[in-house]
Amino acid sequence: MYDVIIIGAGPAGLMAGISAAKSGAGCLVIEHMKDAGRKLLITGKGRCNITNVCDVVEIIKNIPGNGVFLNSALRMFDNRQLMAFFAELGIATKVERGGRVFPASDKAVDIRNALVKEFSSLGGKLLVNNKVEEILTSGGQVAGVKTAKQTFPAKCVILASGGASYPGTGSDGSGFLLARAVGHTVVEPKASLVPLVSDSPYLSLLQGLSLRNVRVTIVAEGKEVKNDFGEMLFTHFGFSGPIILSLSNIATKILSAGKKIAMLIDLKPALQAEVLDARVQRDFAGYSRKQIKNALFDLMPKSLVPVVLQEAGIDQDKFVNQITREERGRLVSTVKALRFNVKGVRPLAEAIVTAGGVNIKEIEPQTMSSKLIAGLYFAGEVIDIDGYTGGFNLQAAFSTGYVAGTAAAQFQSSRGR
Image (cartoon, rainbow, N blue to C red; front, side):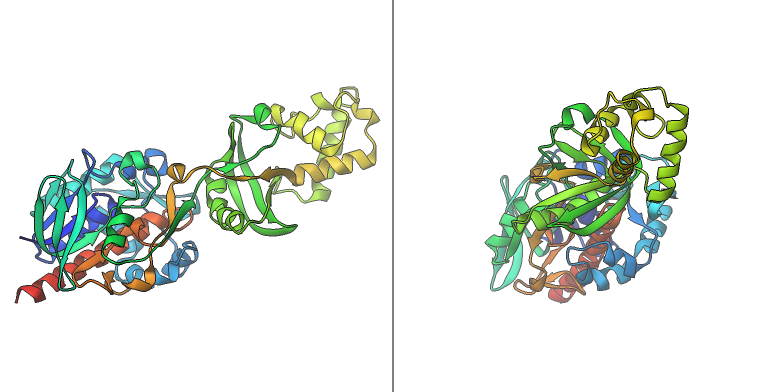
């Protein structure tokens, strides 16, 4: 019999195994993929944005999906402790724009390997290619797990199987089925941190175009809802990139409520309209004998020019010295608020993070323990928590994993007496 069995070898599961083993528990991590941490390897474009340097209050603000529930866990194992933990494992970190923390090597595999090595060094056992089919209970308490190959008795079980996004990495939603089977409620999983879909006729012109230092605003029924500054990408289906993913959380919720939304791109957020107008006039003075379609390349990428002119209602073959003040005003307004319709989001399988999961009302926040089954704990994305990009989701995974592992080790010790 194992003291603690962890289902899932992602960041939450490995951290749970490490913290439980450090507390003296005999641990087994079961992973149904052929190796550990597959989703971890693709986070941060393969660089692994492990956390953010902002304080706990700001971390909670950046986890709109039940961030307050994580208050205790984040204070028991915060971002400073996480960075110190990796430093002890020989992983140096660095801080980049927006407080994002990455391994100095820029390699997610270094994070994964360090976690697996530490778990193993503490006596933990990792079993791969083995899918848990059932969490076994007896008399309202955990009794172990059943896999496709055998049954493993255990005093405690930690469910850390991830959400339902990127199923090819192992986060296939199977953890939700396990939780439901033992009586837990699962809030319907939805995509979070996911590209947005548009039916704009301009996408064929803009596909592959990356914009830096722009501000994107989500508008719902005429009202500005949320905006973000940074980088975005046009795709064949719509929009992606860091700020699009951050805004997708609120976009998904609005769309799910049956409301229509649009997206406004400020191509020159550093310039007020009056300053931008003066800039345009200077450009016009230098290109007065050119057609307008050939006079805006200093202001924006070439592929955007026909789109902006069309939206501004300006004949692209018109010469610059023929452009009226009113037309120039429309041009400036369009540059400051280029509008695109948003009709949906990409499928849940393409989302970076899953919104939804095991209902937090059924989980004790100080220990991550089930309020329904003694000896059952939860960690990571299987819980109904989701945050913005910037390291917040991984911090939540590590914090809940640490708390669940520590609490499970203490609980199994008391059961053994």
